[in-house]
Length: 117
Image 1 (tube, rainbow, N blue to C red):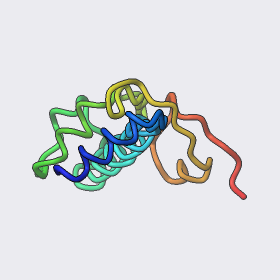
Image 2: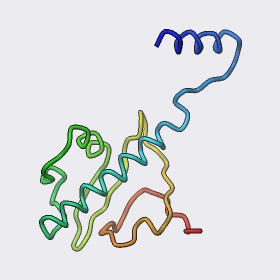
Image 3: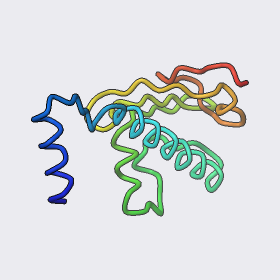
């Protein structure tokens, strides 16, 4: 830890522009979104329906609450909307292949869907 702080201090004193949080919102937002989708879809597999709210999801691991607190969820008839509202510190901008949605009940999201290659 001391070595890391020393390196960052030296770089900042030499005028090096080092942003250790660059891309962090997108990386954490991507993880929050994908993990939430997995938990929601697992709930449907177990119960036959999407949860009314994320509080209905059972058998959560210690880290699962992190993902679920970073998204806005609403169930619709036959599916759900899922918006990522937090990455590391702010709202991320996420792009995923359109094929990611295949077989999911995801009907609306703030994710940008790009064509699969």
